[in-house]
Length: 401
Image (cartoon, rainbow, N blue to C red; front, side, top):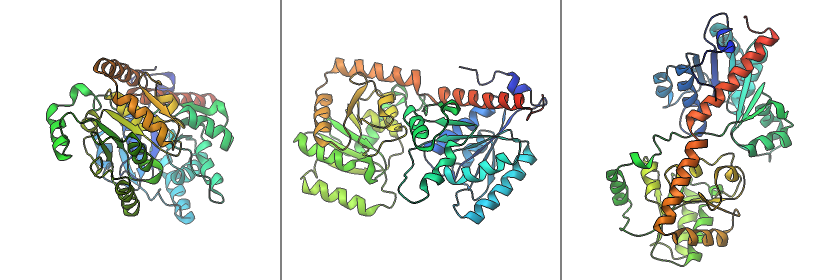
């Protein structure tokens, strides 16, 4: 993998100046897209490149400024055609003003403005596809297709790469698969103190020695919380605790549905909706089994990787990118999606693991993540894509030698 700081012909052929990359995202509130944007801003600064971020703003703006990136606020989250047209004109001006070489769009609404702006200047256009977007509404396929129309298209999994080719006819030679990466210094069992575990255990009223099954993820139907509740009912055990960790983000109706299902299955003493958690490494360390039960295929599945990074056994729905993230029966188990019986069987297997088996699994899982799914690996691979399009621009005569 290319060192982030290595000067290359692509780096130094830009009229003796540092390359300029403009990342465009809807907002800087929270989420995997935003986290990946921050990670790249840091990598660009470390490589001596200039980093611009265009968004509608949000609390994560401070992180970009600390990373040495420049933030420009525009309403790029808007789907209003008039606003998008205005955004295009403003982006063209910014590209010319700052000498932007690469425009990197990470979401659909801003990508439409970003693509038009790049095509009307000498900037190269790169996209990252983070999900298999819904196709239900009329014209939705057309709206989504902009993400498959970059000079390079970064897919966060091989599953997403296939989806881009099959659904949007993206040219395979333009696609680069770069898995999302996590901060393994943050998700590190050795750096997760006993005090943090005790605090969370006390907050959640967990008794010593009681096995814990955990599903992290915001409360939304497709995350499969109800599938896990049904699986817990089928286990028929009252000596375990099941923690559903995540905010309802205003979905109070769905939360009430889950509470009603828990009551219907008489699991009030077993299954608990504990809300959001600001210390997920400690939370995962408390779990004897971590569950990913999404009923729709995911483009990546961050919790799958985070659980393995903490050495926890993961039981994941066998679709989407899960098959790329789990080593079956070595670092976790894959079960059919939306299948409580199969999930219950896998959980029974995990809960029966002895200490030696758990320690062996933990070692394999941690190594698996550190070998393949770190933010350093993700950023280095993305920098290689940037260098690739810059070299292409030089060959085409769009960049001064």
